[in-house]
View 1 (tube, rainbow, N blue to C red):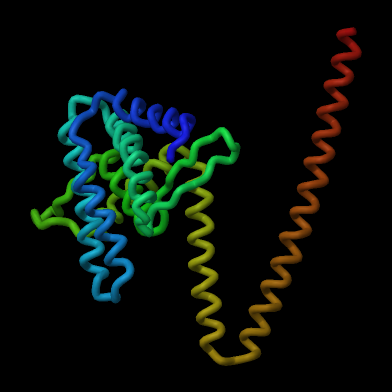
View 2 (cartoon, rainbow, N blue to C red):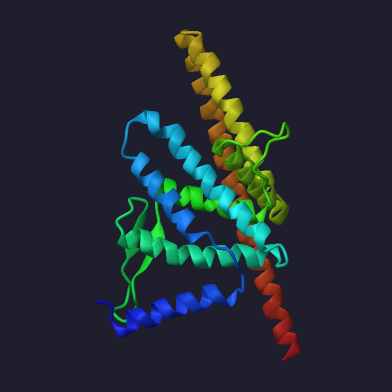
Length: 243
């Protein structure tokens, strides 16, 4: 039986979902799709295609929800979807859906919440991306997209958004990826020769490079420490003059 605190918590969630003044949240259809995914996940591998069709349904429902509320801005629609989905997630968790679980509050006075897990959480994230980036459900040839295609579109747009918001981090990630690819190719080529001498030579080269880099890092650390000390001394001197 729900306590008064649990009811209050639940009522707040309902109010928050309703405050957005959005319409057409496809609760029943989404619930059926998540139940279908959970059921198919327990069956043989042959159910994979059917499970992905259920995932496509979730994404399509997100797209229809956005279309039904096209008078609102994208952020409002995405938030409305998120808030309503939280309520549905609790229902799924209570019903024992394998992709939803109840999370007990950290404090005794905090009511439990629910979260999607595993494949269900991944699908929900991609569906939200469909709203955020206005991703269509049809390919260029007019054929319906597969779930993999929808996911690829959303993940690509999210990556582009991250690159735009933090160019330095994107540049670093690109550098790491390029270096990693080069290293894998070099390692594969040298190991592929089957010659111990080639492998020993690679090891020697790497150890020399490692030693040089470590020495440079130590030198740079000393320079940074010296610069910091000089800066602090100047600051103290300026304070003394001002006094």
